[in-house]
Length: 315
Ligand code: PMV
Image 1 (cartoon, rainbow, N blue to C red):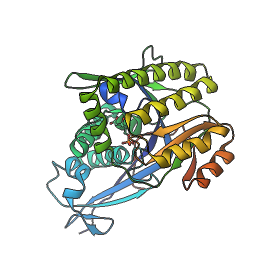
Image 2: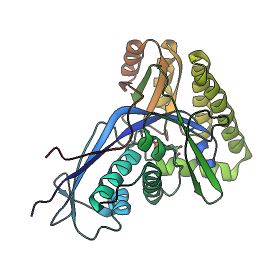
Image 3: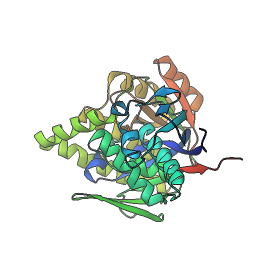
């Protein structure tokens, strides 16, 4: 039996400022990038992913998103986003798959509903976290979360328990960012849990997340007036604060240090513990070389890209 394929794609993202603190309702600024994942699904006789049997215990995002599907599915994925690298691969997968499934059901989800769906999949898979990644991968372009005096269009508000995240559109700035991947996979859940334990035990860790809030607000103001020097300073400051929180690692620090002589600023991006760093620079080739010299893989990323989208079958 052959059935119709339903295909959707979504971009990865990087965090300019504010990761980890955003879990506690602090502000963050995120840009979607031109690394994407595409997911195709079709009704099938048995569950298959890229030709292999699907082990739903090891695929919690898939398990959550297909919870109401009462037939087997074949999944095909193709992705340029390195997995477990702080570039939002799991949120992008959830956004693309959630959108494809909703088209298959004949009831396509709107952006806000898709954010809720992708965020719930993230929570199901990793226990805690913010709707920041889901929002960036669904909307594309740039977003701010809980940024005071945000001027862009208000997109949505997400609430869980006593926490609320207000998400606004921001225009993706015309700046050059280079991402450097350590190649070390570091799942988000345990790193977020580590910061939560630290905050539960120590006022010092709470103070550090408050400092990240200040740096993010100051960086947001710099971004709004295209002040690359100040924005870069805030990024580097944020990296120091994230290091104190315990989510950096030797490889990330080496790559940040190597990029800094040619950058306005540099920091880890995403959950940390491995994964990626990002540098704001006018000299991308030199930064790429510096990243390679420390064993990393550089990507000069484009921003201002579309969010999650459905790809109608050409036939
Ligand atoms: O590593 P990523 O791309 O999943 O980003 C995680 C961002 C955190 O702030 C650390 C967690 C979150 O859910 O906001």
